[in-house]
Length: 163
Image 1 (cartoon, rainbow, N blue to C red):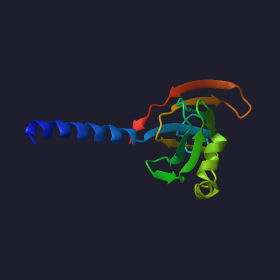
Image 2 (image 1 turned 60 degrees about the horizontal axis):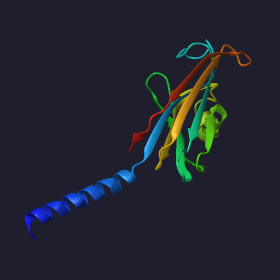
Image 3 (image 1 turned 90 degrees about the horizontal axis):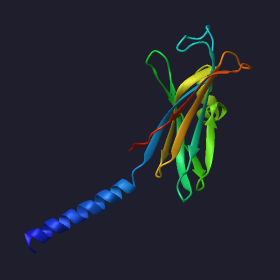
Image 4 (image 1 turned 45 degrees about the vertical axis):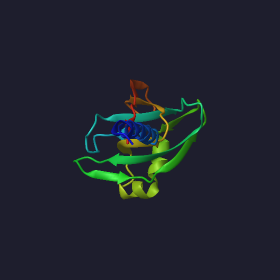
């Protein structure tokens, strides 16, 4: 076989292999969360107040998608925190759902929370891993008290990272 033909075949196989490998990549979204009440009695890592996070996840695909999510707790003083187990999730075409503070606590689970001293204030990342791209948007709100009006609102689109 002429070397020109071998070179062409090699290029074709390399292209096919590369596009196949890319289609198998995982999109990962690391979404910052902050939940609960920060008081002056706690280690002051953020201003006192009540913090809420709502993570909206949308499937823009024409097909249903299954994915996984986990929570990585961030601890103060540069100490690595616990990580929950991966939890299965699914959305049909064009569906969306929200992951909010009660959902985050549920994913973390009572054993991890107990090990942390059952905190009233928690921060870290919700990590979503999917073979299909998703729309992920975090909504952050704060209030001065649990029954108080919202005094801060921020919305952030979370980009995917390819694994």
